[in-house]
Length: 170
Image (cartoon, rainbow, N blue to C red; front, side):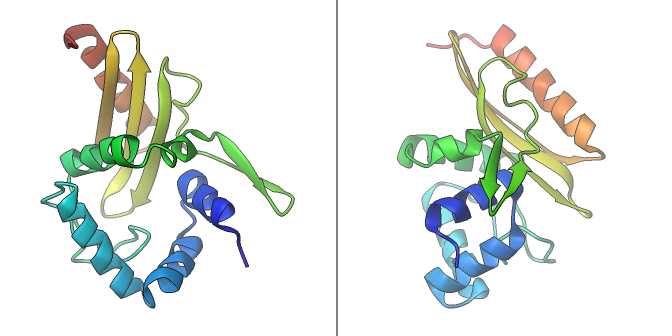
């Protein structure tokens, strides 16, 4: 058994695919049904180019998304589910005596980054979506298909640098 808070932390911090399957089966009866519900919710959020085929984002030939849709998802979590957004800002959590650390290394190292999510699938490469707030405003930056963990971090930081320098927030 796993309590809901620990399941959320496992998903947000560690991308625990086994926990994603347990949550999917518990909430929808099967992972396939849950993935279908995820796709339906994606449409409601405006994610027109996303199709989920499993609960974890693990490779499936028909699973697809775009950087724009992932940015919409992150913005939607902030706006529509603000009580859950802070889970994406945890640097680590402890479970049954073990500590699990996030791969979103921009948390605590890039000014204003307060949440994000990584992903990796061989076919899609290294992916990262983060949100950062600075006095001038808030930005979401997403990269997909990077060749390494280091490059995904570097490229998101560059996007944030350019965005905070050039965008005039209202």
